[in-house]
Length: 585
Image 1 (cartoon, one colour):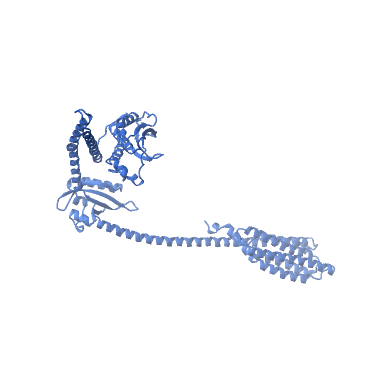
Image 2 (cartoon, helix red, strand yellow):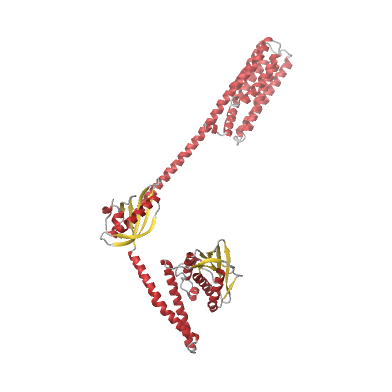
């Protein structure tokens, strides 16, 4: 686009008006001087001297009035505080002023020319021609104003020449329109030149502002880039320090798997120095031959997809030939051109952890076989005694055996919970999903847990009719979830109140809700309520007992069945625990 075409038209108009008004004082002074000369020259006409002087005086008064009006117009423009928005109005007022000025001189030519001798007619002709020509530099910024001004002078004078009766004057009258057209053409051309100049000035002024703003932005960006460079350098130093001080082995490989650098922890773990390993293929040096092919395949896949790989647990060889199990995290560093610059490998020795896991599994197995079996026998024996099958026993002894049975059951529940968590986390827990009626199962769980709720003087009830909805889930595990939620609700609800259970459809899932009237969940405990051994740090909670594993088990069991669990505050106090399972289609 031409820069001149992008200039603001309002500002161009305002500049034209400013140029016209800046020349108005010169036009006023010229009008006054020429008027005084004309009055002096026009005295002593052919008509009676008194009448003639009166006519000249009348014309001079009109000039004086116009001059005063033009001075007031100029003063008003200079005092204006909003020239940009009012430029059009000021231009119109100036056009009216120019037309009035031309009319006065046209009046002088029409009235005074026929009443004088040849010398004075020559004077008037020269005067009118000079006024028309002199108006070009004054009004050429707006050719339309100039055309109005010149027409007001020439048209009355042309009429006088054409009707004077002199053949020469008639021929001159025929030439006047051509003279008018020529001067207007000159004014029009000058108007275009001025207009283009104003537009260019504003356009290049705007460009200068844009370039200035651009330079300022560039300076700011350079400062920001410099700051960013310092931050990158600082981050690089921090990362280098982190890798150097890291307790785990950190390697940097090229895209073909050759070692570039390694940190001190890697030197200590594998027994190689950084200088020894530099440039060597890591897959050939750090891994036994049995897994090198698998590692190479994973490496090629990672380089091809430009995606990190986490938790690669394989055997690794130390310098002394001892095999250890390491867990590797590989992260490719990719540049903006999507090329792999290098790969950061982090290796952690998992040998001791694997051994600890093996010992934990052995302990779990021992706990299962060596503790649970005799504990079950003890609880069964105590139940026989407490039921009176073996005969009546003393009240004091019965209280002791009842306490023993209850605590034995609590111990058995703890062992079962620990075993369940261990099976879930080790991936050994298997489910037996089947299509079952969830409403019937929820009703069954209420029946099975009423005796437990009675111990806390709490009722179990349903919120209306439980809908008949089918789900695909493990019956035993859903009962386990319901038992955990109902037992917690019964323990923490106020005596004499009811634990209410409801069901509702929730999109493609069915939701089961358990409403209790307890004290609610403390805010500080909400983000860890489904963690292992999680219990609110309250004496009230401790009095109620529990392992802190129930909700964690519920969460994991429901996730294995494709569901989820959560809780909300209950209106009027208490908590609503809910879980959702996908509906069977």
